[in-house]
Amino acid sequence: MTIKVLFLCTGNSARSQMAEGYLRHVAGDQFDALSAGIEPKGLNPFAVEAMREIGIDISRQSKDVVSLLGQHIPYVVTVCDNARERCPIFPRTYKFLHWSFDDPAAAQGSHEEKLAVFRRVHDEIAHRIDKELVSLHEAQRSGT
Image (tube, rainbow, N blue to C red; front, side):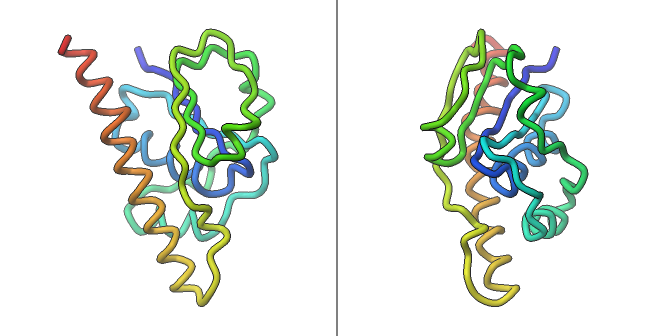
């Protein structure tokens, strides 16, 4: 049985989408990864490019929060401060986590400079997922 994890951001254009794609890639057999936005916007092409560089395609991920409201979602992870402050109620949520990451969409500069920020934020997200979700779940499964 997989565990639902919702990554929630303001626009659901980058951070939450990258988190969903990464978790699905590394532990899709253990987790049902979802992402949503408080005020959903279009998927950021830099997020798609940064993830594609590491072999993860997020270009077809959903951007809809309305269909998730009212669902049983054991883990809700806000990835920006605004989403934490405005997070809707999800019934029967086991754990709310808050991970505040810089907004890579706010990056300035050349294409390569912006992409570098998306890469850095992705690496930070991957580290938190590996440390706090995947390892937690593995410890629970093994009884430690």
